[in-house]
Image (cartoon, rainbow over all chains, first blue to last red; front, side, top):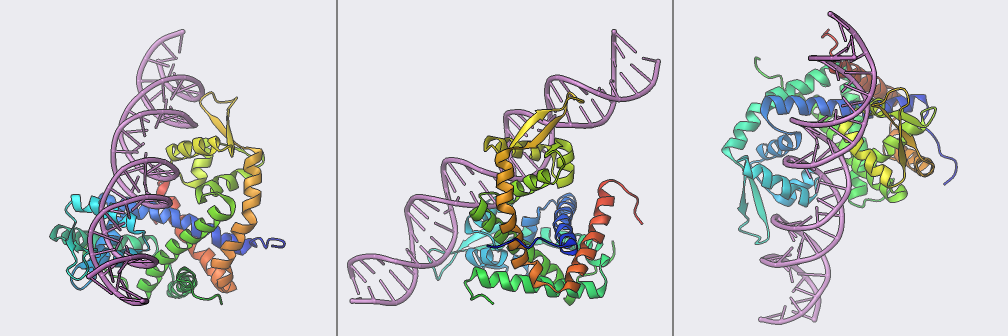
Length: 159
Length: 159
DNA sequence: ACCGCTTGGATGACATGTCAACAACTGGAC
DNA sequence: GTCCAGTTGTTGACATGTCATCCAAGCGGT
């Protein structure tokens, strides 16, 4: 480990900007979502993933993988959402260990009521502030970073 | 509130990419930081802000504002860091209510030991994967979003 | 000096996330 | 069939973050 290569001015600006945006965007989106729809961002993400799925149901591990959550976290969170009536659990017929999370009618109503406002907020605070070129650049750059990190997670070779 | 304007394909790609990058980058940077330096990201941010400050000390509220943390969160976190010997608290002579957080020698050693590796990780997983144009674009776009949201936070008028 | 209003920070109760153990089950080797 | 390593999901203890509340101190008008 030789001399560290610090960030130059532009890199530093990008990195600090990213972290600050991350924090502010999170705070604001979470605030509006809670106020308008009574959902936290994790709630929203769970409901959203479930609603995009053919049978409105997913195996726990499948959902955990998609969301990049630990099984433990998902299990705890689902217990809470279940108590609020947003989802239910069902046994898996083909695997005695497994279980499904199922979107309940109330869960469907909740996500349908929340989605338009949430998308509008994402537009208002992020997307609509960017040029078309910036949107594309953001898409390209984030996916590149994600691909690298996903590879690392699943043990793919370097470079 | 008329028909919602959903995200088109490119916007959706950017938004999903952003959220996924956010999560993966967080996990990986936090993992490496903890492994290599025994610090959490919040720890690192506190120490980093303190070390960049002239007297290695800041008023609690000043630090909380910089980090966009609630005072409560900061207070709790500092108590924990204080117990680990990374920072100390001092009374403020000019304001009897106030207090300073001060970087301790151990805190300074910790941040100096952690910084090179952390910066290297930021490079490896993000910065060095981007072209110079992308770095600039990221800097520009994030700062634009931040400016808007900061305005909102402090109650500045809407355009 | 007195009063009420604000501010800085601490605190306790509670919500959420993490980590390590665990039980139930699967599926392949033999 | 029996064994056993690996997988699935749950659980409890603990770390962390949030929210409402509190206290002490400042500030400003009278």
